Structure formats: C-alpha cells, structure tokens
Amino acid sequence: MPSAPPVVDVPTPVPQSEPPHDDRQVHGPTHGHKKAIIITAIVVAVVIVIGAVGGFIWNRRHQSELAQARESCTAAVQALEDQYEESQKEVDEAQQLETLSADDVADEDTLKELKDAINRYHQFSGDKSGLTCAADAHKDVLDYVTRQARSRAATQREDAQAVGKAAEAVQSSRKAQQKADAKAAEDAAAEAKHKQEQQEAKEQARKAQRTNENQESTTSSARADGENIDGDWLSYPKNGKREYINVRYGFSAQIPEDFAIVTPGPDNGDGQTFVDKDLDMRITVSAMHNALDTTPQQTLATYKREYDVSYSLIKGDVMVATWAQDGDVHYVREIIGDKAISMIELIYPETNHASCDPILEETAPTLTAPYAHGGADR
Image 1 (cartoon, rainbow, N blue to C red):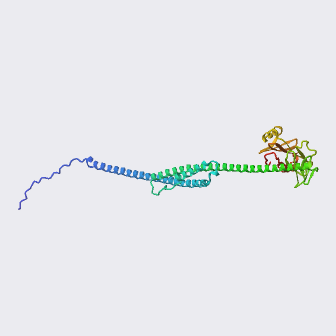
Image 2 (image 1 turned 90 degrees about the vertical axis):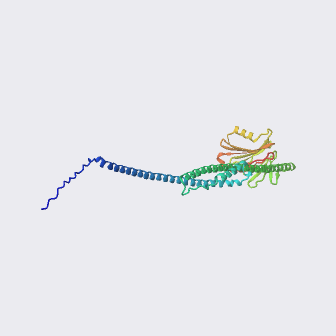
Image 3 (image 1 turned 90 degrees about the horizontal axis):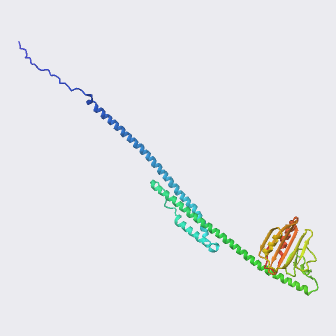
C-alpha cells in the first residue's frame, strides 16, 4: 500500500494590512483643482465678454465721432463755398464802380479805398480751393479741415463786408458829385438866363426910350401899335394881352386885355392900375428908386412884419410874397435892382381863386425891369 505523501506545512499567507484610507488625500486635491479651472474659465470668459463689449462700445463711439467730424467738415466746407458765392456777387457789383473816374465822385479817395478793398479780397479771401473732406480721412484731419473752412469763411465775410462798405462810400461820393454837377448846371442856366434877361431889359429900356422920344417928337398921343396913357405906353390887344411900358422907369408887364386901366394914374408916373370888375381883380404895376440899396431879404422881412405871409420866395433879385387879408388874396412880386425896385401886385377875392389864379400865374412873371440884374420865374 502506497504510503501517504508527506504532509508539508505550508504557511498560509497573511494579507498585509493597508494603511487607513484618508478621503482628504484621495479626493481633496482633485476637487480643488477642478474648481480653480472652472473659476479661471469663468474669469477668462468674463474678460473676453468685457473686452468684446468694450471694443464694441469703443468702435461705436469712434464711428460716431468720425461721422460727426465728417458731418461738421462737410457743413463747414459747404458753408465756405456758399459764403464765397455770396461774397463774389457783392465784389462783382463793387467792381463795376472801379470804372468811375475821379471826375465822377466828390472824394477821389473813396475810389482808391474801394480798389484796395477789392485787391485785398482777391489776395486773401478769393481762393476757396484746397479744402475737402476725404472719405478715408481720420477724425483729426477732418477737424483740421473744419477749422480751416470756418476760419476762411469768417475772413472772407469780413473782407467782403469791407468791399461793400467801400462801395457804399463810392456811391455816396458819386451822388454828392452828381448833386454838385446838377447845381453847377443849374447855376450855369441861371447865369445864362440872367444874361438873357439883362439883354431883354436893355432892349426894353431902349424900347421905352424910343417910345419917349417918339412921344416928344409928335403932337399925337397915338401910335400905330398902341396909345399914350398918361405918358406911358399901352399896346393894342394881341393874343389876349396888352403890353404896358412905364416910361419913367422903363419896366413893363403883359396885362390881360379884359382889364381896364384905372384913370387917372399917379401924378408921379411911377405906374398904373388895371381892373376886371367881373372878377373883382386888380393888377397894379409900379416902381420906385432904390435909394437905400434895399435887398430882397430886407424887403421880404418887411412884408413878414406887416402881413401874415403864407408863401415867399427869394431867387436872385426877385422877391415874391403872398398872404390873405380881409377875404382877399394878395400877391406881390418885386424885382430889386441897383437903381430901382419894380413891382407887380395882384389882389382878388379868395372865392375867385379858380378864375384868378391862372391869370396870376400868366401875368406876374411878365414883369421886367431894365434897371435890375434879372429875375426868375415864380
């Protein structure tokens, strides 16, 4: 019988004891690391969002400022162009005055000042080129162009205003010269009329002298064209008028033929009176020696002291005065010369002015005086 195998005593392995399990060492570090990663990710995300929002806001603001700068630039350049067109019109109008000569203005310096103002405008303000608002220009460039355009517009406006002011001075000077030229022409016409009236007065004097000589050389008081009235001469009617010539003083006047002479006349032969009974109108022509060298101004002053003169005129050696008294119109015209004062006086009721005024207007200016310097129309 087989023998039993030997029994070997094999020791049973005893499991080694493990160190005690510590959750702080196994799970703690892993959880904190994850938390840090999450926080970092959140921070990064926030930063990215803030950066994106900030960038968006900055970009919007930049675009807005750029748009405003471009708008301001465009408006300023357009305003400069508009100002240039407006100023140029004023300068073009002023340049038309540059053709005037020194004889056309009262003050020659106004023309020189105008030319200087126009030259200054063209030299400093006439050029509006070189300022544009480029599509790709930066804000700083646009702001610079805006400032330049506004500055040029202001300077241009000031220079154009200076041109306009100088043009107004030339216009005023031109009007003053035109007024002076008109006065000179009027004086020349008055002088020519004065000479003509002097010549006519001399002719009237010679005519009166011839009349006197004819009266002395004939025993007849009648002439072919008139008659002797108390030593004076009265023509026959012609064109509705009769010419009266005073022999003593040599003055004359045209009397409407409907007016009858009032006889007898003054003994001293200084004039005559004519009357229209239907109109109740009287015309008296007379003269006197100017022994006191009376002037028209002195004569008018006397009338104003004695009467309520409503209209008066002094022109050369002629004095005219009109007033109303006791319902009648009184009109006096005197030619005051070195040797004699000749006068015509018309009196008529105020109620008859419609009929009598035209007679006055036609008759009064016909008074002539050979011993006076001349006369003027009423």
